[in-house]
Amino acid sequence: MSWALLFRAREYLKGSLWFYPLVGAILGPLLAVLTRQADTSVTVPEMWQYTPSTASTVLTTIVGATVGLTGFVVTVTVLAIQMATGTFSARYMRIWYRDRLLKAVLAVLAGALTFSFSLLRQVGSKQVPNIGVSVAGGLLVLSLVLFLLFFDRFIHRLRPVAVADLVGQMALRVITTVTQAAQTDTSSAEIAAGAPVLMVTSGHAGSIQAINVRGLVTWASHHNHLLAMQAAVGDFVTTGQHLIAVFGDGAAPAKTRRLQAMIALGAERTVEQDPAFAIRIMADIAVKALSAAINDPTTAVQALDHLGNVLRLLGATPLHGPLTFRDREGTPRLLMPGRTWTDYLTLALTEIREYGCSSIQVMRRLRAILEDLQESVRPEHRPAVDAEIAKLDATVATGFAGSVDKDQARARDRQGIGGPAASEISSPAASK
Image (cartoon, rainbow, N blue to C red; front, side):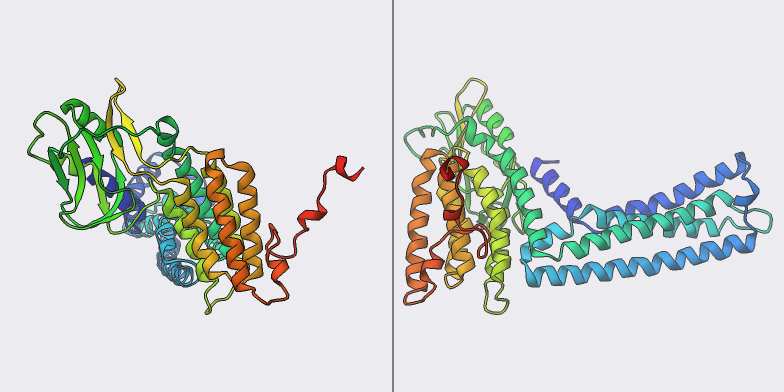
């Protein structure tokens, strides 16, 4: 099985809502067999023994309860998806149906259903699965507890700030791992003169979800070639579009399937190797909140809080665009497009500035973010921040031309509006 197929299979299982409930449904009858064997070898105290009629009634009730509770969980999930996609971003769906607690609830409910149904077949006039009936009751209680935990998470995640925080945490985890390549080598390798000896094209259309960097470097080192990616992670490629250019003096292998198998294509982008996608989701939340239909600038400010945290981490990373990956001997083997600091800054703030041009909250919060970034980012990243501040000044001048609130819109405020004025905050030494 190829690397790309394994990656897509792993991503599919992460997002599937049927796999873990199916596993629970299979484990249910197996657990029923184990409890039956335990009943034959263990003497249960009288307080845990049941009559045949009582056992049948309890198990029948549990079967009905698990079916009803499963339907209620599915209903709540559908409502959550509808509200989340309508209020936040359609890209948020990918995060919601990957929730592990939701899958745990469905798996335990499916297991309790098949377990209880299997025990019903063991109930006879002279044989009662005492241990199994108690275990079935325990599974029902566990299902109810998990459902309450899931319902609590569902309620809390309806808050935009909770969604922005969740996506922001995902972005921070991805940035920590993905940008290590930029920290190790940002020098660009020279491509040999002449046309490439081989062009690898896409076998089908889709978004580039991930790239097997180690596999490509190993292949290029083995064949003594230099590979140059023609598209970046997150780009949508069409069928037959160029993916990899192979440079070198020797003859390139005629078959390109192995190289194609190192690039995972899918219907939509993922966050696995694409921190910009997480930034895209948070920006979407802010932009939708600023739309005329919703008109909620406070939500946009909350999204900016987490965007500022992500940008602060990115600003401390030496992002210089194209990435060069080398083999163990230090020879350049793979060139990949890479985003610069300006690319990330533009993605995070430009649309929010455009759609929030008439909101004092948004203008003030943007200025606070940019002025904080001026002090925290690497020196080579500061010109891009200065350019964004100049754009923000122009936006305020246009959006608040002739307005009595123009001076307020030009001020910085980490809370958007209502926060302590920066001029009022002074050090102890300055106040003496």
